[in-house]
Amino acid sequence: MIKMGPENKNKENWVDMEIWKEFSLVYRILYKDLEKFLSDYGLGVIEFRVLKALNEFETLPMVKLSEINSITQPWITEIVDRLEKRGLVQRIRSSEDRRIINILLNKEGKDLYCKVNGNYENNISAFLSCLKEGRKEQFLEVLGEIRKDFDVTLKSKQ
Image (cartoon, rainbow, N blue to C red; front, side, top):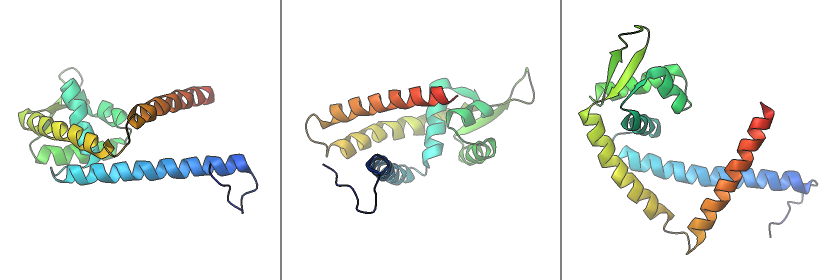
């Protein structure tokens, strides 16, 4: 049982703040581990996510890449610039609308993504191996329920 802090009179708000704090700490731990892992391949988290999206769709408009990764268009331009300099992606203007720039994952990018992704999955499994028997399934179930609750809450705010 979590003890309520002495300075907090409102238990519900205190519990909400503790949930947020713990969630943020867990997220930060996972994110830092992912950053460290990806840095061994010369990639950042967003760069990896871009390669992942391109691996799934092969070619995507730059605008769609920014939407998929929830980042601004100037930021995706910077990411694509770096990936292009490394020879991992290629910009291709749309023949139908010259304003649209499609990003293509080339062979080098696909090879790197496949190499990183296999090790990425192993890295995640190794990281989560600290959870006791049955905890992974429990964690997954609770996270799924929380995500559904959040989806309902967010939809009701729109």
